[in-house]
Length: 241
Image 1 (cartoon, rainbow, N blue to C red):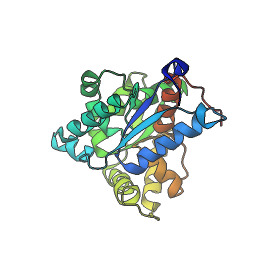
Image 2 (image 1 turned 180 degrees about the vertical axis):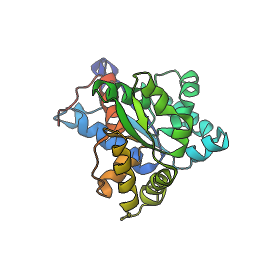
Image 3 (image 1 turned 120 degrees about the horizontal axis):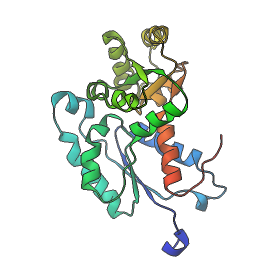
């Protein structure tokens, strides 16, 4: 067991999970994969509250409800009590509650969307396709963050957005082993024809979907960006892979 003295400036990460469970596991995996460590002891202390009973975030946003917030706050407070020094939200849509959450806890919460926008700007992209839940699009979370860097966004058509939501809900969240991506692939080609240089996977189920269903388009994964930011802020080195 590592004492507080031995711990030094190393910090414990807390993941507010369950939104959804596989996306939570994906972030946990990325944190481990991207931490440069050659022993078990070299990895980050991470605590996770994986509560899949949190009400659907997109439904809440579109209904004008804050039903998920009480669950999210309870998880955050539980993680604080367990010793988390930094909190992570592996759900893009949940960032509509980001400011309220920050005002309600005593430890920092990393903003995945702001970190992703900053990284996309550093990568010199000027126009990107945005794939996200309808709730995230409705709240313009990415559009506002990217606009700070004068980055244009290309959004799916109404039909294309329905395909994105189907991929998230009927594919990954439903645990489907296969999913017909033909219509979605055609939409992504249309978005690239409109100038999208890459795609921001603005829902934490989407990186899982791209890998699981073999969707072969260029993308930026905010989950990877969040993991790297968390590793650095926790005081650990990032592995080059």
